[in-house]
Length: 247
Image 1 (spheres, rainbow, N blue to C red):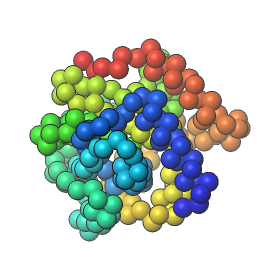
Image 2 (image 1 turned 90 degrees about the horizontal axis):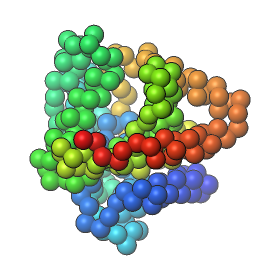
Image 3 (image 1 turned 45 degrees about the vertical axis):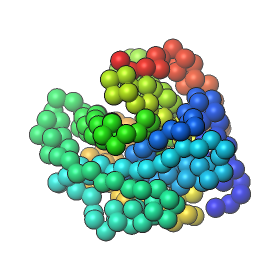
C-alpha cells in the first residue's frame, strides 16, 4: 500500500478511536467480519494498531453465515480464516437461518433492514456467549452519509448510527473504527493488500434504496469537491443529539 493511502486510512481510524474513546486497556473486541472489503480492512488495520499501541487489547473475529439460499462459500470463508490467522486474529463462524427468515417475512420490513437486524442479534448474542465487551463493525464514512440520507429522504428524520453505542440490554459496546474512512480508500487498499474479499451472495445486493443513496453521494462527490469531509461536521452535529446508549 502506498504511504499516502496508508497515512490517510490510519489517520482517520486513529482520529475516530481517539474522538470517541473506542478502545481501552483490557478490552476484548469481537470483529464482525462478513468477508467484505470493509470488515477485512478493519481487521487488518486493528491488528496493526494492536501491535504498535501501548494500550493492550485483544481481537477475535466472527462471521455470521446467513444459511441457504445465501450460504457462504466454504472455500472463501476458509481463505478469510487463513488471512485472519496470519494477522493473529482467531476466527469464529456461526451458522444461522437468517436467509430463510428474510425470504419468508421480508414483506413486513425492507429485506436489508430485517437481515441487518437479525445479523446484529446473532452478533451481539455471540459476543455475550464468548465474553466480549465490545463489538467492532466495519461501517465507513460513506455508509454513515448514506444512512443519514436514507433517514432524511425516506423517514424525514435526522438520524444516523453513532461511532460508539452502548447496548444496555446486552452489556456490550458497539464501535465503528472506520467511520471517518472513505470507501474509495478501502477499495484501493483492498486491491493493493489482495484481501480475500467474499462476494455477497444476497439476491437483493445492488438493488436497494441504499444503492440509490450511494449513487446520489457519488454524484454529489463529483460535483462538490470535499463534500464527504464536510459531511463529517454534519454527522458530528447529529451524533451530539443522539443518545450514546441504546436502551
